[in-house]
Amino acid sequence: MALLILFIFILMSDAATASEARIITQVDTLILAPLEEEHLPAKVISWLQARDFLIPLPWEKDYRKQYGNTLTGSFTGEGRKDCAVLVVSRGAIEDSCKLWVFPQGDTLNPMLVGTHKWNFIGGSHWSSPWGVESVASFAGRIIPYTRAEYLERLKNSGGTEAQCPKIDHEFILLHIVDKGGGWYYYYDGSAWTLLPGLE
Image (cartoon, rainbow, N blue to C red; front, side, top):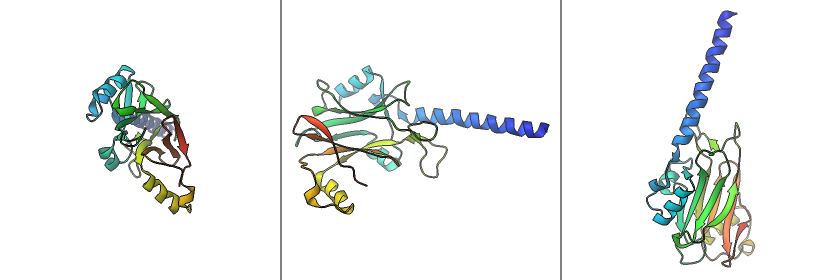
């Protein structure tokens, strides 16, 4: 009986250690300061730092190298150079994440495009990559999309070109692993709209 109790105690200790290690890993997978995203405009970096925002890394290594949850593109109109950033708050990494767009990379009129909260095991925003249980990465990522890419997805889902909404510049997919997400498009220079989701 004493051996059984000892065995249970060891298992519980290991679980607690693993849990602590996972939390540390979660924090370590964040870009701890927006300053580390060197391609962001200086104004945007200062704006994010002033609000104590952090930029979570998406879960795929190749995608991480390409974007890192910050994008540059024509999201508010053709020919513009806008910045999009997915953020969480320092000290509250399990709270809702926010998608911000900075028109022309300026901070005079930042746009809060969407706020998202999702839960995986244990009520977490974090998920382990396939087959790598020791690593935790943020389960959300933002991806730039064009009309041609959206139309291709629409046709692959059994749709037709006639069903494709009017799209004349880039937009943003907030993809959440295993949970879908949202397709955000800025219509007519006035409002962000969710496009119909595609599988």
